[in-house]
Length: 252
Length: 161
Length: 106
Image 1 (tube, protein in one colour):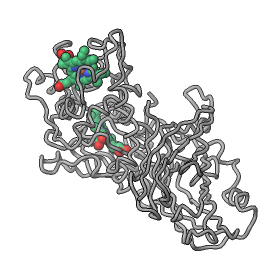
Image 2 (cartoon, protein in one colour):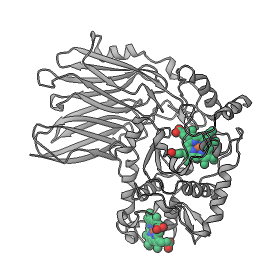
Image 3 (cartoon, protein in one colour):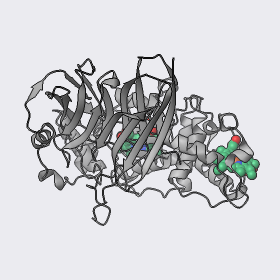
Image 4 (cartoon, chains in turn orange, brown, yellow):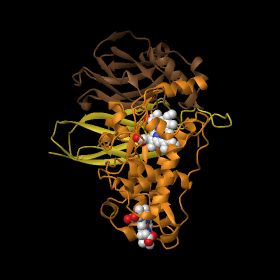
């Protein structure tokens, strides 16, 4: 273990990417994987987007309302929405991510039981809503109520965790572009979620990706839906402000 | 299949570092496939596809990346030099692998009206290995092509949650 | 739930060779994996795919567990007449997924 850690730390440091040098995870992928993401008819995540489109129009819950009943045409009403999430939710007094926001609508507006984390239904609806913002710049809200949560996300990002005693920053700021196992370490910009990860053989959320990184350094991952994961996302989206959304992405 | 089956890439100097990192980072994904040892060989599988007929080299182009980031989804295209006429066309394309738990990958059936003899799909490769495409023509002849693929280890793989 | 996506040009000239792509949502469970308790997860894959053009089979495939999840297939056909191109995916569990696309040939 000590040897491995020493090796990790012996790699030269790239340093945090300057704003102009920020690169999406897709920039580090093999050309075949990039091509898979670029073409909707070969991007498997489009199967989820198509599912989400159907759910959008399906009446649900006691009142028999569909998302479309209130929000109409998603291509207009949801355009740009994903680019400014997580956002502050009055209902809970804290930031909520896009999936959480959708579940709030399920619970309070349809009303129907919220979807489980990482369920196919929730991933599909989230992918469909986020897809409406594809190509738009990430626009983190300037809401001062979010500041303490974003700061907490930043602190979590810098904190050393796990048996490997590594922070997110130690890999994603200091060593991006370097090889780790078969993968290149990306800069950890959450530009393409939910996305199809070849390793998962499925679409998954940013939370699932973050949990994978935590397990990778042998830390106990936060549970799905944990406030820490939303704070981390808030921080990462701020850090990626201005970069184009790619949802639904493909990653190795 | 692929969560418990990880490749040991054999790309020279990188290998030692990769194995070390992978060992450190990935809690899961080390066991070897149980079935892999007992399965029929690539040659056996191809023989049952051809019925033992002789296979010639040529006419078949097998496009597959030589190095892949993840063995779960590897794009493959098989193209055959064939006029695709009633008198001279491809009838079947068989795709096989060397080291997955099962040698067969897919068998495609084509007709002259395909116009072009070209098929693409995505396959799983449990580890670095050879992949072969064997093509049957309407005159009963068989042609083939093969390629070897290096499958690298993924970092930070699934937490099984 | 929408379980398949297909791509066929909406129009083509008679005699033109067109590309067809088809993708279905499916885990393609190999039968070689074990769950957390060490029990083998039973095989459940799409084992057969058939594409017809106005009722005639133009392409088919027998698939094995080495086909990636959410199976993707791309192949070609010659545009002959305006009509329906139909796709069927046959699962180990007896399920059949279907999709169709119309093509206008001029």
